[in-house]
Image (cartoon, rainbow, N blue to C red):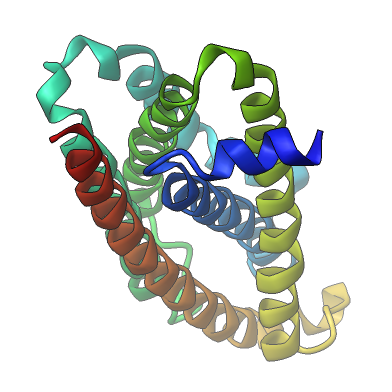
Length: 219
């Protein structure tokens, strides 16, 4: 089994695509986890209101995931790169909106929608390209590798960026200290989002390397 999965990782373009998938999932989980902490503990939102704040990200994610294949095949590589660019820009935008301790107003929902579209544009084509590149006899092993990488990315994102946010924010507040903690949390969240934007830039590089490798393998 190990040898079969090793063969999957030797397919041209697949290792870098796997690394890019890992990056997407790490950003995805780090973004949602730390923003949920800031919304509830920093801004005092109820769980329902905090959850609904993420709704604008869900709709574009679904829309892009279901329709990206309608685009010409030659543009699919561009979609991946554009997804990482959009998501990195969204993280930087949220950092700017939330750093003063405010709610960010309608801008949070707009940028949240852009982040959802960016995640889908990066994730869905990458997943498809990984699975299409491997030989049929390795399909089951390739699926296992992808699922493992996705789950690992989710865990690493929560652990890494949750730790970053909590180290910067310090102890979570009680209701009596919420006003003071709001600004501390905002600074911690803005810093975390800037690091997420940097990781998005790494995703852009990985996507470009994957495209170059795949082009080289087909010429």
